[in-house]
Length: 68
Image 1 (spheres, helix red, strand yellow):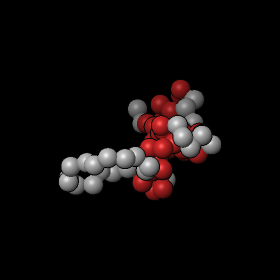
Image 2 (cartoon, helix red, strand yellow):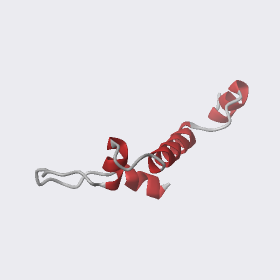
Image 3 (spheres, rainbow, N blue to C red):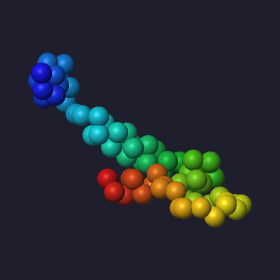
């Protein structure tokens, strides 16, 4: 049985990747309208203080949103 057949049988409109994409953008919108002083908004905008050890730069959640 093909994936398209299973999706039609279960009446599923979008696949997993599209669902992740929609939820990511929805959460991004939610954080953008949030008070800038709250932790999630502060983390998104990069206003954290302190030092991290020198390692390879981590992939940021915002990078994935910009790619979408």
